[in-house]
Image 1 (tube, rainbow, N blue to C red):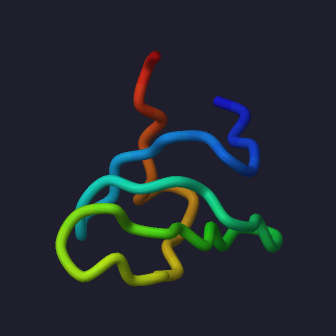
Image 2 (image 1 turned 30 degrees about the horizontal axis):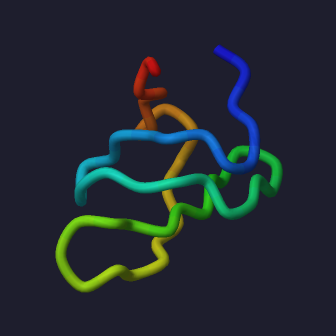
Length: 50
């Protein structure tokens, strides 16, 4: 699975969009709840099919 900036993803803390990818860390802008930015490991993020 090749993740790219802007992809919609599901995380343990809710759904969001990838803001940046730094090695094995994925920075996600969450859209559920308080609209926070969180950092996740690559294996904690699942691509949401369009």
